[in-house]
Amino acid sequence: MGSGPAADTDVKRKQNVDDSAISSVPLFASLDDDARAALREAMHEVSLRRGETLFHEGDPGDRLFLVIEGKIKLGHRSTDGRENLLAILGPGELLGELTLFEPGERTATATAVATARLLELQHDPFMHLLDTRPELAKHMLRALARRLRRTNEALADLVFSDVPGRVAKALLDLSVRFGEQTPDGLRVAHDLTQEELAQLVGASRETVNKSLADFISRGWIRLEGRAVQILDLERLKRRAR
Image (cartoon, rainbow, N blue to C red; front, side, top):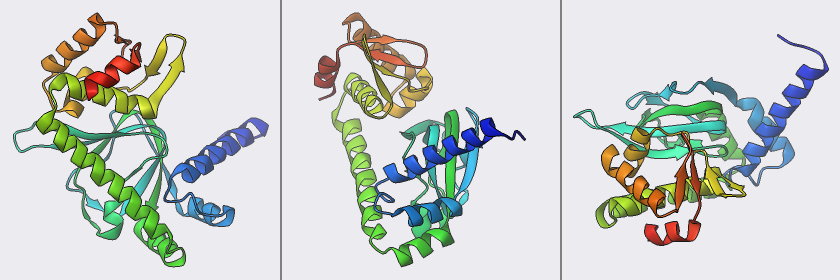
């Protein structure tokens, strides 16, 4: 293990990133410095390479995870083997929080789609935190309400939106969390394969590729490997409505 000024600087950098990520989560935003430090002490680091699984659907669950770096996909597999992506989560987002209140089987499989680093918080330390900071329960309820609202919107989109509309909406949602402004427009490094993007939209890969090709021909986007450059944000927004 390395030591000296360079190693100390790396440790401090990670600590600052962790503190910033914890502060960015609405659930923990109201904590003072001492409470945040105590929370960080109770959390354990988990590192994943692309393709590694954090937990499987059906596994026992009794802890939440906070994404510090990278991206995690939440997927559900049907009885006939088809996979549906429920969400793509990035830095500052939580997963697995439902099992903290009612420990039980995981309802989805969590897999890294890019090299990821997470902080793990088990059931007992979190319950102690809620006992000493009951106001955190309100923030948790808000977070769960937002998750439920997103689920309801996704279900409505499957019923009422066509595939191109869902593709446009998915790209916009990814751009809000992972987009970076460039001279050419908004670059979104989503790290998803075309198959994973199709699973996220809930359509076949061929249909999603056709929608992407149409957007490219109209000059709205440009594909760059596992990233997309959004060239005309307003028209993409109109297509998502």
